[in-house]
Length: 62
Image (tube, rainbow, N blue to C red; front, side):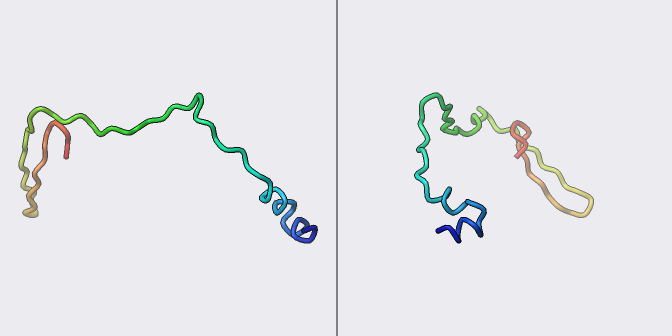
């Protein structure tokens, strides 16, 4: 154990010590909801010069 501490600079013994478990008190937990769904889609179709066709919703940009 002394050799391992000497090689690792003391990190071996530090890694063997029991760690403190995190407590949920005082933490802010975000459950993660999605973005709100738009009431209506506002579709837009674009055709580029090289012939690509792109369909997007103007409300969401997707």
